[in-house]
Image (cartoon, rainbow, N blue to C red):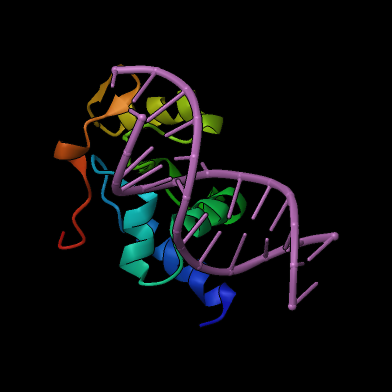
Length: 98
DNA sequence: AGCTTGACTAACT
DNA sequence: TAGTTAGCCAAGC
């Protein structure tokens, strides 16, 4: 699989995250079946502009340091419960089944 | 070919 | 609960 295809796959995965849900970088990597969390993060940095990138957060439930503030707002706008700057993964974690 | 870097993680302390 | 450490994977030099 070429890097370009990998990027597409990741972007697609992110696009398929429904409003009100979030996924971790690791989840995306796992879903795509290739690369790792860091690769996903790198892609979001470059090509994330066209997808709901704010629904992708760290496994700890906290968004990337760069965009914490903005991202939290967007998430809340999606109806995601955010407690003290952290997302409650136990309840809004994305399930590919949906 | 070897080293550095980073929207990451999980395990330890 | 908060810091640190080691592992991770691909890209760029």
